[in-house]
Length: 194
Picture 1 (cartoon, helix red, strand yellow):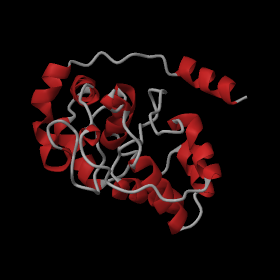
Picture 2 (picture 1 turned 180 degrees about the horizontal axis):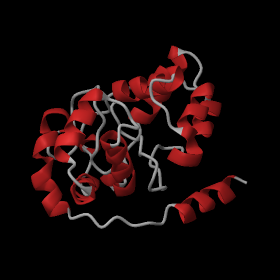
Picture 3 (picture 1 turned 60 degrees about the vertical axis):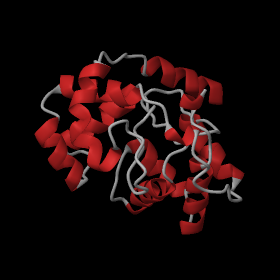
């Protein structure tokens, strides 16, 4: 059944983005203060964009622009700099083409004992090692632990809503479970290292 779900999701998500990574690098100047030019931010509360799926980044940026993902700072930036779909596609292509600095850094966190059932629940979309192969779902491997904690807490308390994740948030459990899940994925090696 799990394989059927994965294959179905792959077939649904086969649209390919056509962004220009070179043009995207020039446009990424507006992203430097939070995400850095290569998307491999060292600021723990912000997500690393380097090596993320292009389609996921497009989906997220459009959600900020359209205010369906309501984070005031990102809405302000999106409204000013994501002028059209070409800007979004170019930025996504640029960040998707970058490698994660987690490849050379020492692990940002030690792996904690995590409830295996919680990881199994995450793996349909994100894979057991956090390197999602489905283009509309983010890669979690090597992501900033603090960012993952904040994102999961936002899904759990309803501040951030998205159909699949709002349902998954019911399985997160308490803050200790959330921290352990975040630590587990933050300690995984991103596939852009290979």
